[in-house]
Length: 184
Image (tube, rainbow, N blue to C red; front, side, top):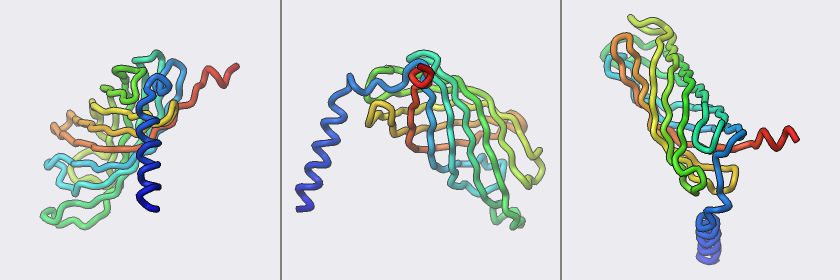
């Protein structure tokens, strides 16, 4: 019985993926809300432990290809054992980015994004609590429904003060809402 359910689930998934024309994902006037989780690898200069993060992203598509997106992420970590500081570090990451979607009418839509942001940590040892950064990412959305996509991304965050390079890997689920249809 389990094999039958598994087979039916696989066939359903294959049929959803094979009908790519009905999966037009990113489109003009669409608002995208994404909930994601991931892992941030901090620059060794920061002397803090790498940590899992929760992320919320909100975007808007101007055209099939171009959009804008804001990211808010939070984490709690601690200094590395070699620092002899056992305080808890509360961190926040905010960024605003331009997004370019390749192949906007495909089931799988790769994208690039770039922009600026702020990394905030409290307490920090020798750095300012809030540091500006520039960031860029490569990722893809896999549309399982017309307005629902699974998302995976790798993002590089470069803080120019002290030349720190952090890397954020995350995955989540995106839901698109047609703002133009709601106005009618």
